[in-house]
Image (cartoon, rainbow, N blue to C red; front, side):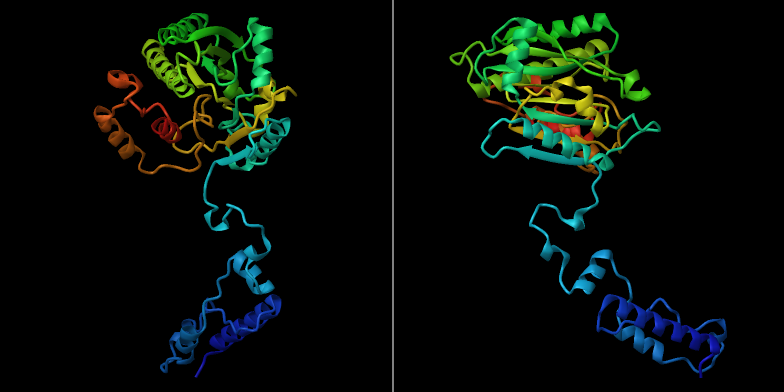
Length: 383
């Protein structure tokens, strides 16, 4: 015996099932398991209803994702009509946006720069902003060294002819804003350490920027940005690989000395110092990167490679130096075991050894820091 309430609920469930089957074009019989059979009045009936457990045991619950609905409606999986790529909808859970554009033949072109800029802008939804939409969590672009562009700028700004590609390096360096003393002292540190390693300091070039589109937060901490040009004394002195090793050593030692002089997160930060790549980044939105750095807008700025990143801050606050790409990579997501990983890496420092650096290996340590994000620590360990 069924109560009137139970009968009404059962009928409503049947009608919903027929409507679903007609809408999906599906022949399978589906009953809404969420439609409870019985109510307060039904529970007062002495004889239990036996049909409900039978239906629930034989018919699956009516719970469909968008992908399942498309599959039922078309009769084939959604992936069947899509080109094969590295994108997987089931992994659509990350935060930051990352992208890579490259010429498979290592041919530099303006198109690589423009495609990378467009890719970064299209990932604006993967980056965060503050209360002011013009204050971004961070964005940036890493490029393969734009050789022709750098040769032109070195000639215009420094009056020097750069050696062959791979025999010189350019570094983008942040300095504390509106602090001439810190600017002078930090430059002196970098120049002294560079010469101590037998490398030649060619000079400094201020990086032209346009900050008219920035919000108040990035404006308040906007650094002075300059480029350091360094030359390898000669292929007979250092191989290309050893040249990179010495640049790495200079950067690590300069960061350590700068932090001891000015304190951590003082605004002195070396975005990149390499003969192979150069990084333009900051506390920007994806749309602002190419607008802020005028170098990227220059038609002569061509490259064969670009790595881009749109940041969504999670476990650290936004800042100019925490933007990505870092020196060797950009990272998407969070490292949940960060504290343990840093502790283990610090404890391994006493066991680290290098045939090249020898007893000076300690100059590269520690590899991790509490003043870097999880991505910054990962990049440092990777180096």
